[in-house]
Amino acid sequence: MLNGLADCLIPEVQVGQRYPHCRQRPLQHNPLAPLLTRRFFRTISIMVFCLLVSACNKEQPPKTIKVGILHSLTGTMAISEKSVVDATLMAIDEINQAGGLLGKQIEPVVVDGASDWPTFAQGARSLILNEKVSVIFGCWTSASRKTVKPIIEQYNHLLFYPVQYEGLEQSPNIIYTGAAPNQQISPAVMWSLKNLGQRVFLTASDYVFPRAANTLIKKQVHALGGQIVGEYYLALGDQRVNDMINQISAAQPDIIFNTINGDSNLAFFKQLATLDQHIPVMSFSIAEDELNLLDTSIMTGHYSAWNYFQSLDTQDNKAFVARFQKKYGAHRTTNASMEAGYLGVYLWAKAATNANTVDISTVHEFLKGLSFNAPEGKVTVSAMNNHLWKPLHIGKIQSDGQFKIIWSQTVPIRPLPFPSYRSNLSWQRYLESLYADWGGSWSAPAARPASNGTAK
Image (cartoon, rainbow, N blue to C red; front, side, top):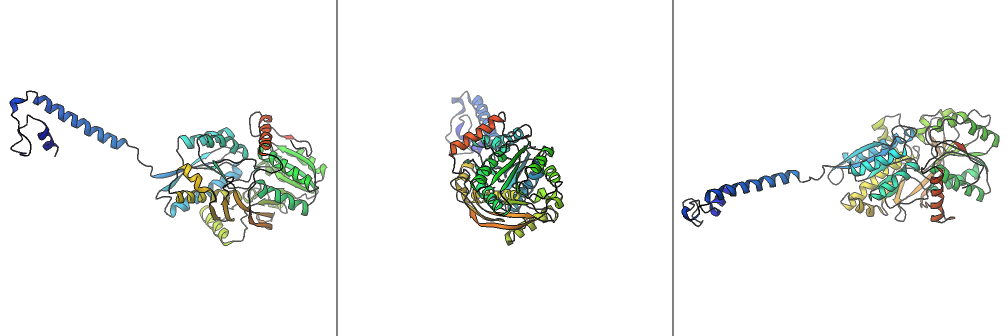
């Protein structure tokens, strides 16, 4: 065909015999014919070559949908975060085994935040810019989330955050699948003062979640007629708890509200058990996974408040636990943050399916008001603040390392991340004061005791 076309266009070729439809011209009328012939075929060759190169270089649509998983696999927070990674990966595997998402397999890219906030920030930036992920599932401590948040917002990306936290935040780019304070801390404080006593000691890690949470707790305790008899903060990972235990012994509290995170809890509960008296502890960051690393003989009789426990007696939860243990081993346990990480993947996938795209801005819109039947029960994304409507349970630690659920609010609780007794601007200034006190960080560099019951 190409030769035929050339014969039609190039005048020196005597084409009449082969292609009678072409107009003939005598060769003598075109002295430049040989030159034109070479130039023509050279031009055609170049054009064909360019077309082939262009086709080869044209960016092909990705064969998979990349998603980021950003959690601590090393450092003090690995005790809690590794299992969230496992649950997140299980949800991805289940979706892939069911046919994938929008006709493609989901490809997880796991990054270790290493219990270090700048490392979390670097990881988030790399996942967005280098790996081109469609969403990030990650962070545990509020210090890590606070460090990642401006990066997520800068690139108009999407983060699913799976842990209960202090509230005082909402972002159009973050879906908070853990509890706000009014869905965990406030109901547990009310229950504890009613059932365990009025004299309260606060034990905490020294970063933004415990500081802000304790500000809320102190306000509520005073409003309910209770008394704060002591308050002590440890740096994350600090094992030096003797001074804290001595202050608890001297204060003689009825109840301890515990917001220690990570492996500092190991030293805390071990030393607390040496006291002559049993002081019940209500923890807001101790779940089944942490109990696996603690001596259950010293933990039995203490409490935790969560939106989910492995012992939740529903068919959906039993099936979830069975799948998890089949995948990772019968010795493994599930917990609230793992379940929140798991359901976050399904919420994102459901929104992407409904939108028929993983385009981040579009998925943002389809997440608003979206519901999912999770192992904890039905959850719904609030269109007002990107938090979930969630139930709440209070569990008492048993000798087998599980929680006996002794109180529940099964009707989902509306998320209210900003307590109404102060304005949002006032809360923002409070957080900024913490950040400034810590030298431009969301956690303190060293352990230090705090004055009894005085809110900042």
